[in-house]
Image 1 (tube, rainbow, N blue to C red):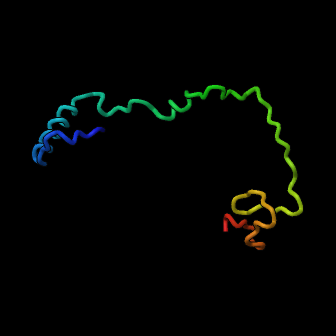
Image 2: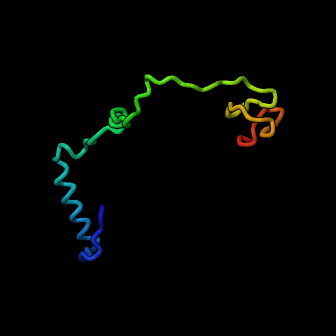
Image 3: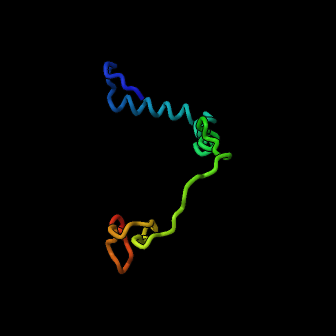
Length: 96
């Protein structure tokens, strides 16, 4: 909300009276407690241009774990042996 710094200032009593009057006026407003839009529904309905990838096929070559690699038991990512922080627990340096 924008603030007009040039407007005359009101003391706390005037502000509280004004806000009480506003609250009383809004109490009978039926739409005051309703949410305008559900964010999840809006996000699900929103599509990026060109985002339909249903006809695309993935062309990623998956290689098996190599002899010089290990699987971290914390993040479950495959790392090179140089990233091994704890050989007993098989934890990478990032998770250690």
